[in-house]
Each structure stands twice: as structure tokens, then as C-alpha cells.
Length: 260
Image 1: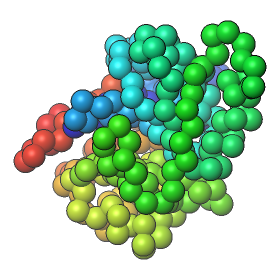
Image 2: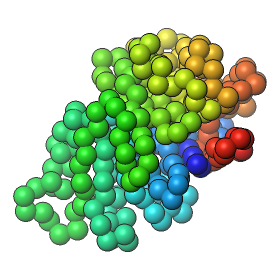
Image 3: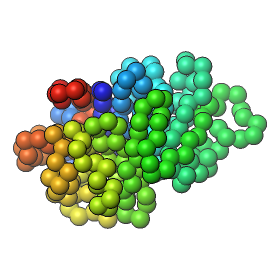
């Protein structure tokens, strides 16, 4: 399994428009963050988790030419806004794109992209097949995917476990029952917005506490605000088994090793 971090920034991305803070003015390429998304290659199947506003740019940057399904965590704009650009995969692969999400997410997509679901469609609109996810294991393109229910303030959000990989974004609470689904994973990805308390996201300390509780072999942090700090500075504060993800980072999970 190969995971590519397509984007690791929060809803505004980094740099933030008009911002002159040290993070937004940084020349370190790791401080340039598109909206959070991930690309997963597993057993000849390719999945994207979330299609934010930067989806087109991310697909072009990583030269992604096969996409078998889109998994949505939740319906906020920074996670769904780029869905229209799956048209290119429709044309290239000559088939509809299977999209997976909760009932709440699917209803939001039908409203946000109403033209794609109209009874009489305008030529060239995205061709999408909607598939509702529940809170149990699903088989998607031959791959077992286990949704993990987390909370983003009062909004239900799905994280996902695929084999020994767990991906959680936009969360500030996970029940003990849902944490059980995460245990035993080799790699855990979790959001860490900033150091200060936030109403709907884990802080850096809260994310580190979760990692310590779940005890993955390796953990990566994602979904950062420019308020967190520079990549190079924050990296020095982290435990040995925890890293800040950055746009374009690839990790590989094998039978025995995790390779960067």
C-alpha cells in the first residue's frame, strides 16, 4: 500500500491569502499546503479521500491517471469542492465514478452539484454513482474499508481504516468504541490544527495524546493551520515515531516495514 498526502492544510490552505506571518512567508516547500486529501494505492486499486478545491492541481502534480473510487469524510467545502473535476477520469476511464460517503454527505453532494444529478443532464457533467457508507466494513473495488465515526464539533465525520492504515481528519472527539477500530494499526494519520484549543479540531497536544493511546508503529499529523508553526520548528518537538506530513509525502506499508 502506498499513501500520498495530496494536501495537508486546513480550509484556507497555507499560505493564507493576504497573510504575512512567518509560516505563510516561509520558503520551505513543506510549509506550502493545499487542502487536506490523500491518495491510496492498494492491491491495484486507487482511492482518493476527499476532493477539495485543489483536487485538479493535486491530480496533475502527482500524475494520477487511474482512480477507482472517491471516499468522503464529510461535506465541508474544503473536502468536496473539487468533485466536478472527476469528469476527466470519466472521459479517460469511460465509466462513472463511484463515490462513497454517509447519507448526510451524499445529500450535500446532490445539493452542491445538482446539475450532475438532474433528470436531464447537461452534456459533459460529472458522471457519479453515489454509494452510502454505514459504520461497518465495506468492500470497495475488492478492498475492505472500515469507516471510523469521529466528531467534528457536532458534525459526524468518517475516518477510514484500510488494512493497517488509519486516516482521521477534522476530528476533536472519538468514542472509545470507535478507537477500538484504530488499535493495532501500523500507521495512524490524524489532524492537528494548531497548539491552541479549537472548537472542532484536535490540537497538537490532543493529537499526540491520541497517538500515545492508540500506539501505532508510526504516526503522521495533517490538516494544519498556519497558526501551528513552521514545519521545521514543530518537527523538533515531536516524539520519534511521529512526523508532520507535507504535501507530496509518500509512505509505503509493506508486510514488515514502513518505508518513506
